[in-house]
Every structure is written in structure tokens, then in C-alpha cells.
Length: 245
Image (cartoon, rainbow, N blue to C red; front, side, top):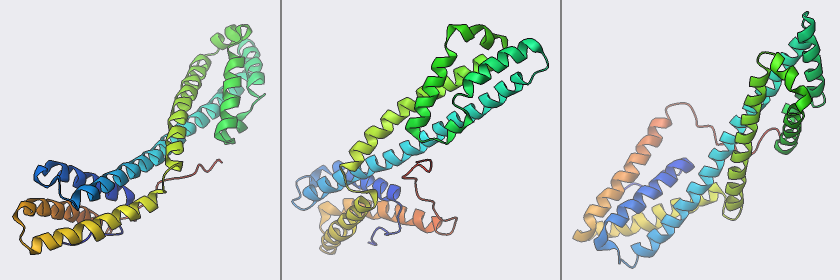
């Protein structure tokens, strides 16, 4: 029975730990084993902590994607209003200039600010555009109502995801780092579980043989996936920090 490869990704180690825990939970005859019971309690805990760490990184990726949407909408809004402000049609030019003056109080540069500053500017900009004195000008310009609505929705979406992300980070900060959790889980699998199962197999301990084969197949499956991946493009790690600061 070969060990789980140390080159396994964090997600692969977490998945392997989860499958091993499920397998053990189904082996009711082994539930009271004095070695396996506490060992799998630890494996399950480490797996859950690792899964939460993965979730945190995934949430950050989603937050970055929504932030990119906000940035693009800010740039599009700038182009739309500048276009109307330069229109040869006097009525459009007048409304466009008025709205563009409001936008320019903040400018397209807010898209380069950090999360908190950009959010504050967007909220303030949207509040300015909600002024009743601007409603006629906004309605007069095709596409402006729509771009304001899109930015409003993107900002709400960003706020919701940011709360989720910060909750995940708070939980993550109280735990070990993903690589440390991965190392611990690998140790429990390779240096605690497998040696014990090898001993039982050598003794041909009948009640354990089905479980031992299941463990072997799970680890073999993960190792095969790692081997296949190594022949392709190297893996890019999940982001842990936002480049915008």
C-alpha cells in the first residue's frame, strides 16, 4: 500500500481525507477500534479545517471577480458620460455635462483603489446620482439608467460577498495555515493510518480487509490523478492576497 503523494494539492489532500472518513464511518464493525477511532476523529477534524481554508481562498477569487466587474462598470460609465458631454446635440450635451461633472468628483481612478475606499466612493457616487434634480437628465440619456443600475447591483453583490469573505478569513485566522493543515493530514494518513493497516493486512485480520482495500483504492485514485496532472501544465496556487491592496 503506497502512501499518499506529498505533491498532492491541498484540495486533493482534503478530498482524500473526506473520502477516507466516509469509508471509515461505513465500517460499523471497526467503529470501536482503539487506534482507528481517535485517529479518524483527528483526520476528520483536519479535513474540515482544510476544507474551510479552501473555501476562504475560493471566496477571495469570487470577490476579485466581482471587484473586476465594478471596475469595468466604472470605466464604461466614464466613457458613456464623456460621450454625451461631447455630443453635438445640445440637449444631450447639457445633460451629459451635468452628469459627467458629478462623476468626475470621483473619477475613473476609484477603480484602482483598495476594496474599502472604492466601495465608499461608489456608494457616494450612487447616492449623488439618486438626487431628484438629476432624474430628468439621467432619463434623457439612453443607457445611463442601465449603467447606474448595473453598478448598483454590482456594489450590492460585492458587499454581500465581502461579508462572506471576512467571515471566512476570521475563521481561517484562528486555525493553522492551509499548508500546515495539509502537512498534518498527510502525516496522519501516511505515518499513522497506513502503517497500522499494513500490520493488520500482514496478519490477515479478516474484519479489516475490506476497509484496507477501500483505503488502498482511495489513495491509488488520488495518486493516479497526481501522476496524470504532472504530465500537463503546472498548477497555479490559489490567490491569498488582493493585488490592489
